[in-house]
Image (cartoon, rainbow, N blue to C red; front, side):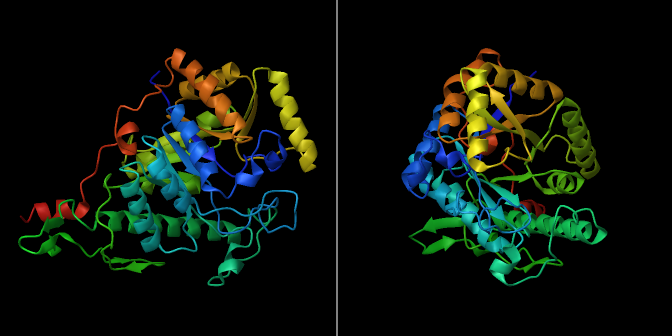
Length: 401
């Protein structure tokens, strides 16, 4: 089995809603740059491939489909892309992947923001594109109206059609940002003070995208990013997002609940990628939410205490793991043997579970040859095995030159 890729998902005080009440958490620092710099530094100490920064366009809610009025959980967050840009100069080699919501934002803005992140991180930027529309987002923006959602209505034909359309819109969103990244050829900037020419205007291209949701002429106002195309990732829980990932993403995060479910997901994803003809160009990461301790009982007890404080047992789309670093390494090895390309871990409490991950899980995976904790390739795309793509407009012009 080849070595796996390893990432960590950062969100507030951790992925348990009561994490901020843990003695190991730092709730007073959640909106401070130093907090996020220290988390990224810790992940970089473990030589992880990249971190993702969670984000949303509405306040967190215990109800996935609507806002709530709870005051005993963390509410409010900083902008993920701005956090990534802030910590980029303070980090060195780790990839930085903020969440951006497609449904209520403009692809032009996201394209130049992530291109800028790629510059300030010297080729370590990515983005997790999220389809929005849940938990009151439309009302916060006031530009669109969606029908009320609920678990009961989720399978209705009307809601399923809405979900499919949102993901089609997201596919167009990603296509636009990718075209904008390509709209400057790599050598469009001349910077020749003697002749007074800063750019070669012939190497800037209109993208002329016209679709149902977007009509964008371009070009971008930001030169082509160092990676050419920063990493594009999505999270998926079914065939519709798998299809989106197969069409437009570099990395897909999925949430297998057991081995059989993992095999089913991989079969479905490979079916979608085969249909697009993209072959092995999509990496599939399994998400796990983890509570780690040297003693398995202590890890379970810590989670149980958080559940008690929160008034309910933790629910997550990802499988919840409580146990020792060795047991987690066993689980990660099983996922690798199933065929996953990597694992993204969601620490239950930050920074405590991230520290155990770095100090105990990473060395255990290294001893098993399942993870290579080193930074020997300069860009995030390099580290994940992706080639730097040529601009599609250079290729189009190349045949004419």
